[in-house]
Length: 145
Image (cartoon, rainbow, N blue to C red; front, side, top):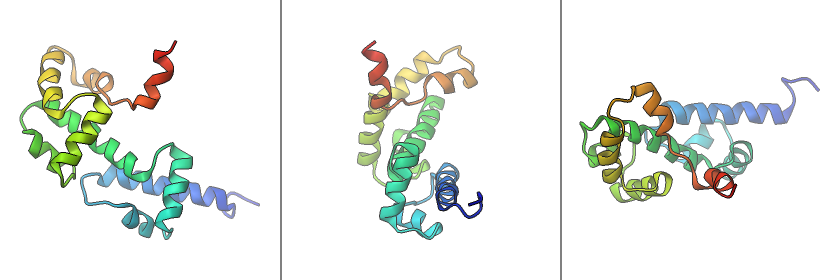
């Protein structure tokens, strides 16, 4: 079986298209059904396959991208938390704040205030790397060492 007919490789290409669409269109209204329709898969199959390939559900991946972008906008300091929420594609300030707090460990307004203080004098390209959100499950093994 060659690479073009291997069903596993075909599915991985479809999953990469979904991931690329999330990365590109994170600020657009996206849901699992719309993502699945775009690659002609059922939403349940897409969710299971995406999680197996990337370690998190498509929705979780989307929210992580949105929070990463929100962190950048909050560090700039020229937008309110509400403006940032809508700019990254979230339609609920409550859901945005809850998810932000889960991923970053503090509320968006606290992050905005601290980021302004912490990033003083640090080049933007360095700040982007060191202030990237890290899921708790990724941090846990390092903390136990």
